[in-house]
Length: 324
Image 1 (cartoon, helix red, strand yellow):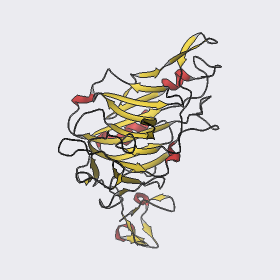
Image 2: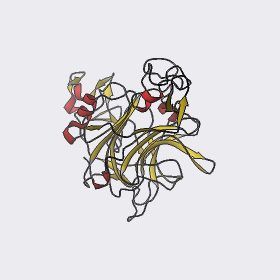
Image 3: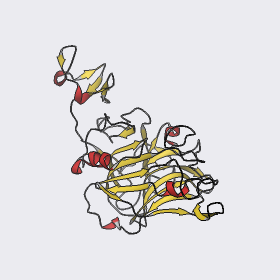
């Protein structure tokens, strides 16, 4: 059964009573569970069928809510109109392969169409990539940190894209701010920030500025693309293999202080009162650990389980009680 996370925009944890009844004594409101405090009971375990991948993932509804493109407002970089965003997740990987953690992608012709994606390249290196309409990209590709030796326990990963406005090398050209955008990508592992690995491919000569700048011109979008937690694109033979929990997407570039709060010394906490939180998938805690849908606490895009192109969990995937 789903759970109430807020009442009249007030977080459950901050409510003492309703109509004179103590919050601790309220079990449900209009048939929906009313749960005080914060508890983490469930995660999802996907993609591992006796050591072989089973191609399970979550397909998120309302994918256009995760385009991160805009033409007005703060934090916009000409000409592409990128908007800042961040992704936070807890993971426990069974097998370190080049499997995706999260993506916005879809099949396109003979290959995958991808807008943004994150995976461990070669099963070792954080690779967080944003692509434009010509498949030019900016990315974090950090070959200085080999994460294949991470312990088998739970870990926390944050990806951040700042999409800065203003001038940078190449400002005034058709790719204004390209270097600044590339260099605004960071990641955090278990609360520690890593700045290495900002890259772009290919690079283009800017005659006006006399420097090479990323050919990347701004995030592309497609109505066919979906957000996929634990997969690249529907039907692809690449899937995350392990457990995922407390996955969230933010419509801002998280600060160091934000990440410290979310990491919480290694224990997930309540995010419901956080500003700029776009989506938060608790991986079963809002769904009683049953069914084939993971509810988005923020109500933007629920995630439905798929095995390849078939709706539902595979025989070896689903909710789990191993949590960080």
